[in-house]
Length: 189
Image 1: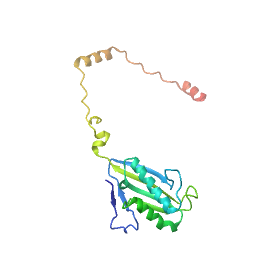
Image 2: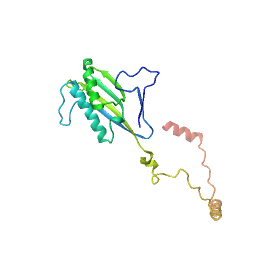
Image 3: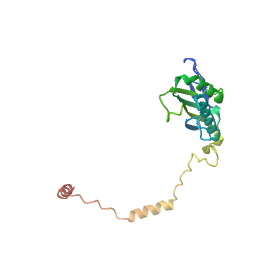
Image 4: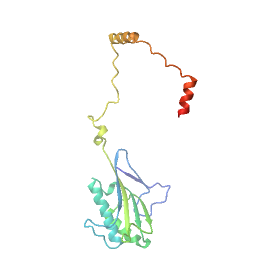
């Protein structure tokens, strides 16, 4: 399970977020692209509060489609274009996300992908996976860490190899190049 922390050595969060969220080992991680306030019907909602609510519902739908939920949110990055919309943004986000407090960043920016978009949120979620569900943890999939010791060749095989090596003629050393041949090759290059 993800673990949110707010160390006492840092001022308490000023909103519905945590200063940090730790993801346990062997977790599934889901990256959710920036979502805008377009509903499943393809229509953009009117106003920042309606768009924010739709954005959050889109994120919940993506989480559910991947077998996750709001509790699995680790980090959200939110972008709004009007600082005056902050109250409506927070109200809509709380309505959908409830008490979830992932690590969070909110930026007021000049514009989004189009002038009709008033808010965009991207998210990261993580869900711990039980060791028994990891492919490497399943006995059938596990490869033995210990290799079987190599068999020592029988005496007979060793003797045969030695006899063959003794019968082979020794390789002649390659002739040394003369300085004249080496200089010709160098000039050609």
